[in-house]
Length: 66
Ligand code: SF4
Image 1: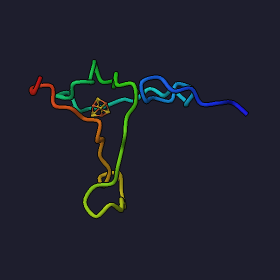
Image 2: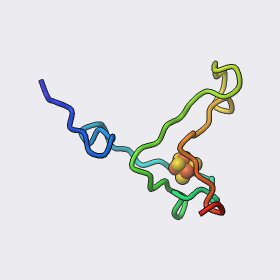
Image 3: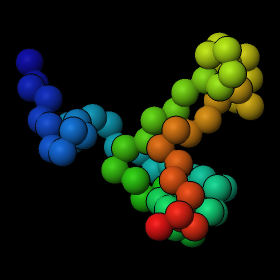
Image 4: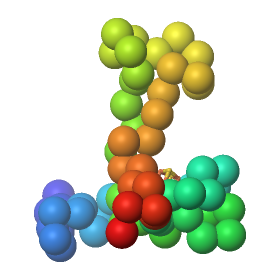
């Protein structure tokens, strides 16, 4: 069994994927892609997403509040 390696709270053995994003006022946004080490996505409102519009990125950080 492969042991998960932890680095700064991020599981570095987890699958990596490119995240395309349209939120250009986010601190992690660079040229239509996310540069965060990890992204957390949750359901909005009552916590039960029915469509993609019911989900949101909670890693978002407004870059105007540096
Ligand atoms: S943290 Fe979320 S909102 Fe910000 S660039 Fe990444 S995917 Fe987009």
